[in-house]
Image (cartoon, rainbow, N blue to C red; front, side):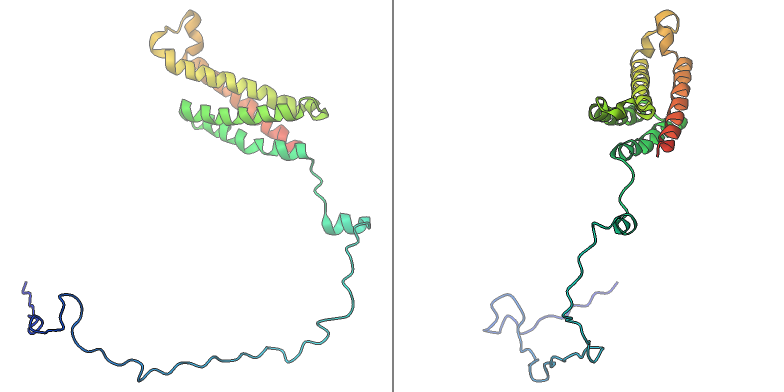
Length: 199
């Protein structure tokens, strides 16, 4: 590869050269520059008649039930229904976690999130009429069941290397845990269907 360099003759000999920058003359750019004139725009329509009408705007007929029921369309779902609808995606994730045999950590994280939301629902509706609903009771039962299975899986992961699967160690047997997960999966599926029917 051939590299050509042209030497900068005369730069060192120039008295105006201070060691940095361009040495030479620049062209006069203002000589050929013509500034553009601002153009005025015209409206698309010639005239809008009666735009500023003297008629006042009529108030919204909030006292009229037809307007309220048809135009405004109030939300007919209760706050409780909205709250339990938030549990459906959580339960679907737990169901998918069991179905795809996810790791103990991922399963426990999803169960923990579900339990925290169930605890919030319990404090919100336990002393109210909603606390007697079947959907509420089913969610509380499922929360307890899921928590116990998550604890069982954590303990099994921790103690499996040290226990025999006979006597007290039987509960940590992988076959027993698989069976418990299948029970939980069935309960999760039933609860999802129950919550969808509550809408």
